[in-house]
Image (tube, rainbow, N blue to C red; front, side):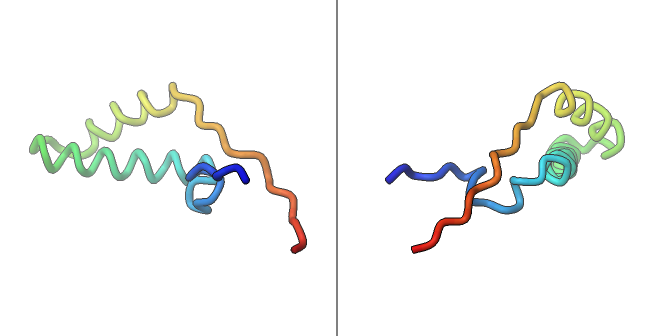
Length: 66
């Protein structure tokens, strides 16, 4: 039996728009805290980088009966 990847099993990673928004929020706030910068310039930079990276959602799984 094939082992499923995290993106296939974690429901929070399956919606690419929510994933992208959460990624931007998490990275921006952590970076702002670590660097002491204002969060908004960091958000702009992170958003620019993250939106240039394609995020692929896994295909929908077929229901299997056991």
